[in-house]
Length: 215
Image (spheres, one colour):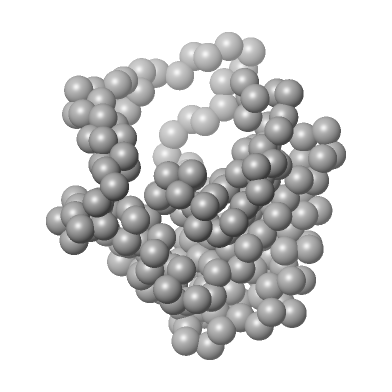
């Protein structure tokens, strides 16, 4: 599969084949993904393979995405916390580059994935999975073999609107560009929910308001 084809046909995939992706393949994908650029070439990535149903259920129960319920495997992507460029969060940018590479490489091998940032608070993940102080969790990426062929798909490139400005911002103002009261209320409720120690008991009620996906 050529690079342009992989970019155009890759999609977030939320359900997978029962066949597990073997350790050797996961290790190969992780190694190749770390050819991604990193700030100051620090290469501060670390990955934890999550294949235990109890761990994935814990992430969901503590407030993680509904996608975690159907996943059989995932990567917890971590990166070195200490950076002198915290204002631009270059550690998170570096971790994100490796995730994007991983997803494209996996797609080329017939493996779907879903990049998840809807997760429990980082401090809880640090304690649960034993991260040392120098490292921070950045995201979870679920993955697995496709249930069916996903290489022949319509391009996902956004051609409906202009995306490039020259020299200065000159895009028209859109409704999504403004901070609405509804958005601020949702943000406040989200922060409140994630400080509740008993939020696992509210999980089924909260799920009613989560965005649902077809696959």
